[in-house]
Image 1 (cartoon, rainbow over the protein chains, first blue to last red):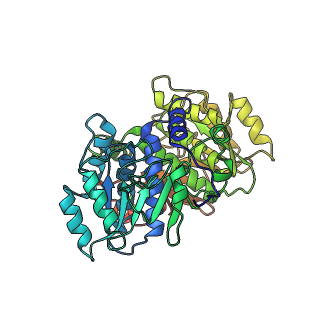
Image 2 (image 1 turned 90 degrees about the vertical axis):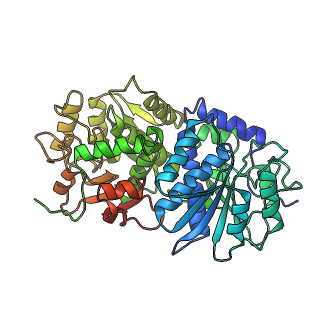
Image 3 (image 1 turned 120 degrees about the vertical axis):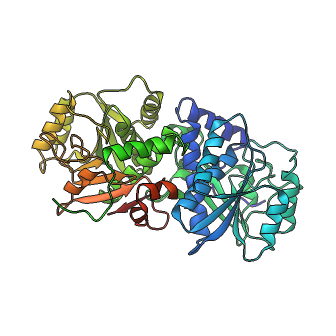
Length: 244
Length: 244
């Protein structure tokens, strides 16, 4: 196993930290998701620059990881160099925030595709999608992967290298947060860890892959409690992301 | 009167646009304030760079303009080069968001001062505050200015050049949004216009002053409706602010 030089946060610790940010830290999910999604967009913008209208396919899962993807799609569109398209097959009905984020994308005239078949067709077109954002599942994901995500992830995994590179948000979808790769999972080229890398990120470092850190919102007390000071000191100036 | 080369938004138009962002645009105030405050922090960080722990005094008003200042203080502190101190004499009791934003600052161990006298004492110390953020009143301000703000603004105005430079958020506090300077108002050195400059910004351009634009969140439809496309095209790359 590759030994990382950075501190990681287990699934349990990451859940506790998030809870802490929202209780004693008084952050709203709107705020945290906005900053997380903005960091994702910045990583994509810098790692996959586009001078024209490069298509970015954003795969949106049913939970918070999906929300980060929706926010990222908005910022990329506003910056005017990328053309996001979303695939959001399992929309949450419980949470108004997701509906609002989706509505913001509709107002930006961001297209939505509706089925795995459309995704596959779009990815097969060599002049089509230049980068894929995987915001399907985050650190609270528990197997098994259900349809339509199972087939989708299998397709992406089987076609690694033949389709556009994948940027995974926090966790390559399907991976076990603590253990890493499982049977069926996303083979990402870029990982953007939010707040701190999760232990599975130790399995990520390979030549040709890039790893970013984003979500620069935790205070000194929390950083100390979770032993993240060294990690946070990697950020430069007022940057919202850092390449690890 | 200096003729600006940029499109401005009247008080009425700015209020309508904000309403539109939050209704049909489905933005929450949390989201918009986070992005606005982040832009303010970026402008301060770049215009008043600090290699150490330069003190930034953030004057926080009772409304949304004050909320932008609270968010800016947080980001500046997180970036580690500036030491924000807040003065927030009239705290809103109606709005939980402001209480949350304040709590986030307490968690970052950002100091708060409590009176005009403390502000004046701090500003008199030449080794003290290096820059002041004026987030007292925004585009929905209606005169008269009440205490303790009246005396405070009078002091700041009377001591222009003798105290630290002032960065005003959206409007130099006290100015009429459409007409500009009045009897008692803030003499700002830097203005950060949010979404678009307000008409009073036409009175701002003088040698030695700097003007930024931030709040990069409006979609093409709204931009077209308010004739802001040329203005928005000034943003470079994925920058969240632009110097006008």
